[in-house]
Amino acid sequence: TASQIPMATSSCGEELTGELTNTVDDIADNGCTGTRTLTYTYTDCAGNTTTWDFVYTIKDSIAPTFTVPAGLTIYKDADCNYTADPAVTHSVPLDLADNCTPVNELEVTYSDAKLEGTCVSDSVIKRTWKVEDACGNYTEKVQTIDVVDNSAPVVAGAMNTLYVEGCSAADKPAAYTTASELEENGITITEGCTSKGNLTVTYQDGPATETC
Image 1 (spheres, rainbow, N blue to C red):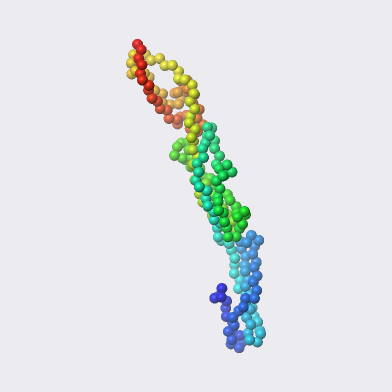
Image 2 (spheres, rainbow, N blue to C red):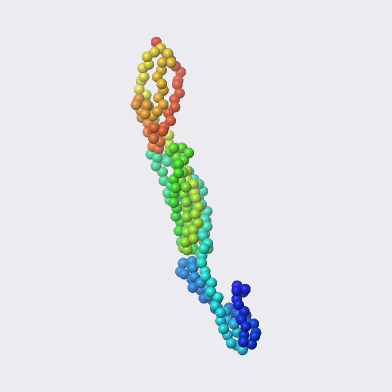
């Protein structure tokens, strides 16, 4: 700037102001660093000249900008499998921009951290998106992906017939309350995500009929 250009004094005592006469840029191929040299020439009334070079460093230290993808929910299949690959979810950063690096040359990567969900068979993926320019400047933002098990257990078969000794509904045996008890008595249970020991078994009694 003009305030950085020194004044000069000739041998005759006149004050001289430098005139910009040359500009030389020496910038790296990736545009990240370099120098610019401004040459100022001072000329006195006798036509004598001298020059002064002002050299400053150029460095790109501005990180790219982007819009992080919105959170999303993906569902597990009956075998508890799922894919969170961006090629499948089509959920990727948008509005990429950088002051120096062309958008198509920005490097976009991500890393996942898998956390427990609110249900034993669910999970949460914290996906950190990173957009980096050619100069090593980068911006990171986090996307939340909920992975949900919405496949109900498959129950097949029929309970073994139970014969109760007694003449009152009060003589009935205790209800089965675990998956293993049901499978020991004629029921087949298929569940892809939750272990059978963690399945919740509930029951409801129908109306009692008594024959003695």
